[in-house]
Image (cartoon, rainbow, N blue to C red; front, side, top):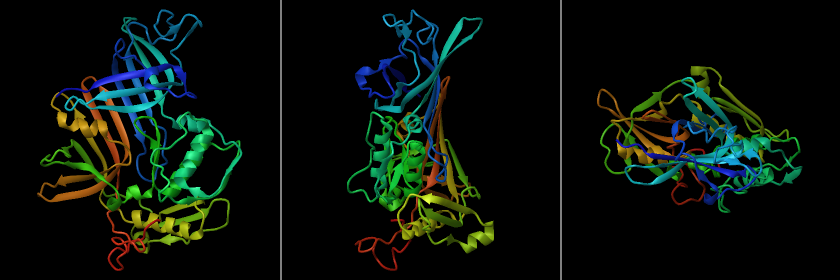
Length: 416
């Protein structure tokens, strides 16, 4: 097995408030190889709140290049009399698939801090760098007292990103034709934490809002959680790995537990006394007790939308179906180079099929969505873990649709 070629780059002259193009980045790993790194992006499961993506890098720094106190560093600005090894500069990590030579950015964000560590009686020096994605900028920003009228959830996310002053005032995945939920009018006061406001929109939509591998704010609406409306990226199996979009895995965590059961749901529209009709699953409540989900400031606009939001939560989560909680790969000396494509190229909100053969020879299949991606790389070992949620495989009834509007055939409740 061949390891990917890993490159870390820093835009030493670009602050968090400024855009950084390719020309602005300096490769630091030529003189200071990265010894290990950990990257985590996404959320543990569907009911969690989306958090900032993070990264930790450990560099060999025997030359002191990444020591902020080193005035001989190539990253020291002698004219200004200060170091360029500073927090809140852009950073990104790139990996090249050794099997295909395809390149992938695994993370892009902003440096939170640098730390120099000395070991072996001062004969070994390392530099530790911690980084976070654009959600940090969103969390630091406050509202502008602007009032946003009722609009689609994707457009509201764009408006909130613009309000933060972030240099990329757009959100990937938002289109004029997107069938997003309509979110409530709101004035974003000077005390509003804008990341929390974005998370509220994401909860109302029941979609995905995150920073992609290139650091770009990205939105996928609730349709991306429905198998028949999503595009399958490939299949993971413990059997044959042909054709080329089928890959093996090392560890698979199937679980049937009560961690994600919801069998009673209530919601109230933001800024009003308007409530949705409470949703209940009596069978689930009798079997597992009442498991409540309550949203007292749901960013939707009507009682009907709130009712549907309640019903949708119960429809998806009332029963402890067998779920694939996670899938992992551990690439070492005996790893399979063909697996680098999904390991390096996978991203949040993607749709896959997972197969497992039981000891009795029974094939079990599951359709899943990627919720979180973690890379842990150290000393010839590359471990990647994806936290997963179930993709809905139900057929839904969409009024007057030629395929999904067949009464008695496609009549599942659709949150739309």
